[in-house]
Every structure is written in C-alpha cells, then in structure tokens.
Image 1 (tube, rainbow, N blue to C red):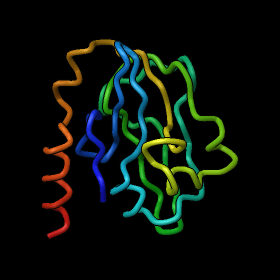
Image 2 (image 1 turned 60 degrees about the horizontal axis):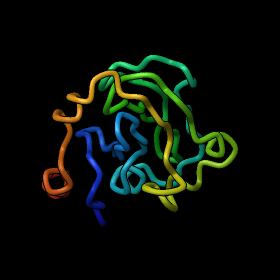
Image 3 (image 1 turned 30 degrees about the vertical axis):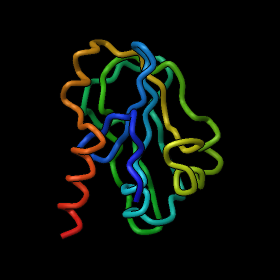
Length: 129
C-alpha cells in the first residue's frame, strides 16, 4: 500500500493535505482496505467547529461501523457531498475523489501532532505484524 508523500497522517488512519491554513481530510488506503467495501459515510456539517482528534462522523462498511476522527481542529468549510449518495470513491481513490472534508485550521501548530509519511508507514508496518 502506497503512502503518498506531501501529506500528514493521524494514528487513526486519516490523512491531511495542507494548503496554507486549509486542510483537506480523508481516510487512508490502509483504513479503507481494513474496513472493506464502504457503503455509507456520515460527514461533519459545514460550519461545524471541530476539536482536533474529536469524533466527527462515521464510516460504515460491509464489515463494521467505525468512527471518523478529525486530525486537525477548526471550522468545516466544505464536505464531499458526492459521498452521501455513493461512498465507493473512498475505496477506489481514498487520496483523491474519496476526500471527505475541508477545514480551516484553528491553529496550524496542531499539525505537529501528526505523522510524516515515513512515520505512518512504520505505524502500518507494525500493525501488520
């Protein structure tokens, strides 16, 4: 499983792509692969104020229902509405069309609590054993 460079990761298997003080968030390839076929995604509301590492929604797959956590806190600027009708992009393209929400960071220093691609690779390698 590839771990794209240029992103940050959480221990809960979410990724963050930063563009100034705006972050795009989704779940990683490892997470979608572990969950199996994703059939439903509940995303945070636009305008909601999220706390870093707080539970913000759910991902439902054929195997389980899992909480979604936000790797960074701030105000939700937008969500991937397309996932409400068809969650398949989360499985097909978790780092692209399967993105979940965009958030304006409350504090950019929060990113220091996230993992680099190399640290995330080590985390999932350890989980595989």
